[in-house]
Image (tube, rainbow, N blue to C red; front, top):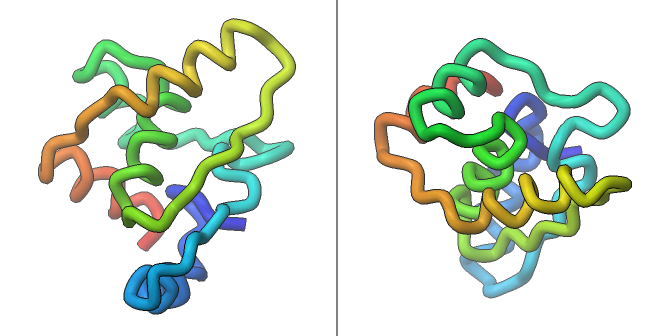
Length: 102
C-alpha cells in the first residue's frame, strides 16, 4: 500500500526510479478506508478539485516511475481520477500534502 498517508515505500520508489523501474502503488486512494485529511481537503478546495484528484496528482508528481491503476465503480469517480492527471501541484501544495504521511 502506498499513498499520501502510507509512505513506507518512499526509499524503494526512489531506488526503483534510479534504475528506471516502474512502481505501481496498491490502494493509491486508501482502499477500503478512503483518504481523509484536512490538508488534502484544503489543497483540493484551493485548486477547485476533488480530494481524490489531488491525491492522484500528488502520486503522479511524486516520481516519474509511479504508474497508477486506481479502481472505480462509478463514472463520477472515473472522472475524478482522470482529472488528477491534469492537475499541477505547486511546490507549496506538495509540501503541505507531504506532511500528511510524515
